[in-house]
Image 1 (cartoon, rainbow, N blue to C red):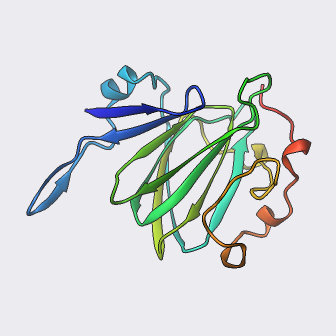
Image 2 (image 1 turned 180 degrees about the vertical axis):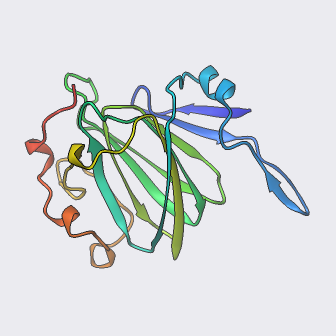
Length: 183
């Protein structure tokens, strides 16, 4: 049982699972095919990933080029992140727009990101464990990215620039105007 919240960009969904809690802790279904299909998520997930990061780590904005494009269902197991996806679908009425949502171990929210979006997140807590499902396999040669801090995107990452912790590859990515849109 999940609550589905539509966002300002068609196809990007916030999902809130029903959490059952008592003095012993909690239980919830992190994935139930029939519930997600009822919400319109019909892709077949083939890979699960998990990362652990500390405060200020900013990963993104990344995507996979064809034929390895991916839809993702992302969530945070512990800690908190600001999760962001940017519409890079050629001809989309929301091209270049983004959705950002705080995901945390406490709120248990998930974000569904369809194919055709760049994705990234910034860690807001001391540490965060981030998990996600993909509907296509990762292929290093198909990885693409763009500057997370491009002013054209207008993303407030909620982490001060002097606290950003970036990979070397994320510091040299091109800006939004230079990307090849997803088709």
